[in-house]
Length: 383
Image 1 (cartoon, rainbow, N blue to C red):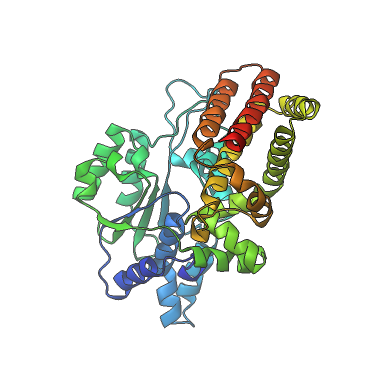
Image 2 (image 1 turned 45 degrees about the vertical axis):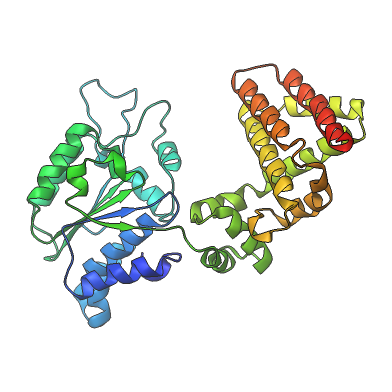
């Protein structure tokens, strides 16, 4: 992966490239930022530039540089080391401690599909159940062993530690010792979402770069170029993504379910407004057939739609985060959600969400929600 593949983050790309160009590569960089802003993409681009791309650019006929780039494109360069959280499967012997190499096949399968992914996706690749993914003390020992070997290509070694805050205490203290006396020509790239969970002594030995949210316009452009969205849809998805490419992709993937949820929301509000009890009973029975996780997502979606309807009344487009279909309905519905009932609506939906999570009978929860929606809409009309 090269810097040109990174979505947005122009300032960070420039800073990382300049460190290499000026021969001022530190021993350790800590890239901090929320999920989806491109920390791994930047780390891979930095590693590619340092281990091969810079040489290939300056000496395009160099066979050595071309070999480096061929290995880097496959993420199989021997001097590129990955460390990441792992689990201990239940089938393993009690004395076996997991390290990254135990899951290297799954890691390459996932990262080969792109540099933007979540810990949830990684857990799925490892087929985790209830385990917590951590970086173990044995992983730090393995890292020390790998770094004690001479770089196979005669240049730098780059160690990318993904979600470094997931190191257990022993692993963190062992890494600290490596950072205190780092091997020559070794770059550590710590990718962190919650830096406060790292040892202060580790943070003090790294050069921190905060990676901000990706600009909305840059996400919109990437959605058009990489996902083939039209300009208006890309703009709307980018706004909802709130600076995260991962969230933008999830929004596209969730489009079918979101459309279903919108139709159920519209049906509820129209039937409640007209006090159509048979329709509301059918509505609640249909939703009761969903799985509980989908029901909870539905209720979270309803909360968002109530919030969007309330905000729509202020006529401030920059505060709106809706699809075109959602806005078409809310444009007519919004006047019925205001200060007289918005808090009660939110509390009702939160209560229903809690009840579903506690395995309450779905038919009762959703029919009660439907009946109370009549009351709340009536409260608005009589206020």
